[in-house]
Length: 456
Image 1 (tube, rainbow, N blue to C red):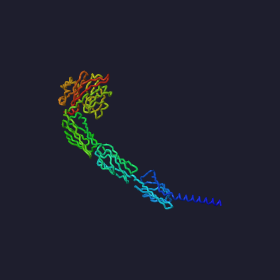
Image 2: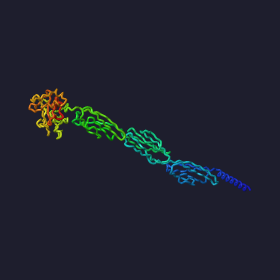
Image 3: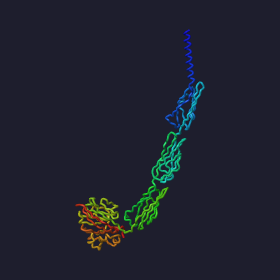
Image 4: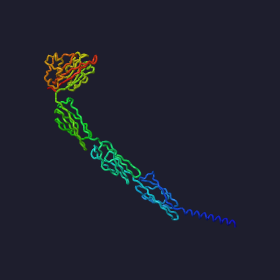
């Protein structure tokens, strides 16, 4: 009897426990919940999301993925879902249990478009300022925001897909920058613009070698220093060529006085001009050459101080420098026999072989009067006459006659005037103004020369 009572008690307890357990299972509510993660934290399409079920109390699950692939799932954990279009999409999870209880939750995910493409720009005309730039925006994507940074133009910053026409006034290098945002990422795209230097007009000139004294007529070659120009218009006063469109023209000025030169330079954007003056002097038909050093025989033959001179080239030469082209132009030959110049004279280039100087071939015959006081030729041209000589008229009146007395050597005791006439009939005077002994072997005379440019 006692055993039966014990068994009955145990049965009651077990039944109570079973009923309590069932009561607990039925009392847990159904709660739908989930989380999701972007693969590599990327919200830009194509995007891949992983959904993690956090629901409780459920036995069955129904997923709906708006805009996703797959669009639905009945798995507790559906895994990854892909999206290929940007936008906001609702994900819904419905959870039910065996008793028919149901709970639903939804979340909205946002996906952004990929920034695709680029922008370009075109320049109206040349890149000389002002430069007008038109931007073409070929960047594609939905929901994109644009911020343009356009330093150097009249628009420093612009928000919108395509800015209006830009204008750049100052030469330089500029970056055209656009920051494109899709909501998550910002892409920076850059293009570089070169604005060429602005037009700047300038010119210089050089005269022909024979016209170094700017005495009419003067042949002038103009050197164009202009930048950022394509076409040129020159205007010349006092010239037989009043205008020119050459880049660097050569013209001859015949009129004495200050002559204006105007250069107008142009490109496709603008034109600018500059005016300069050139002074043309009256023709004296006289070359004036000063402070010419001519060495004694030893100095010349050892290539220390040259003894040969060309009045047309305005240059002294050693024999080693005289070629077939230079030889006919040599018209002054100094023969200093001693180291102290106590025995000196000027010789004809044609007789250099007998002068003691190193010879050259092809020298012209020049008439020389070394000693007017000994020539017995009726010539008296003084240092005062030389210094007063401003044109060639006094030289025209001189008759250069070669005599034995006129060919004599002179000493270093006094300044003197040596007269000469070249083979083409040009007359000149050499003013020997200083005798300089450098050392025991080297010496030179310091001379001024006035000589006709052409025979008259």
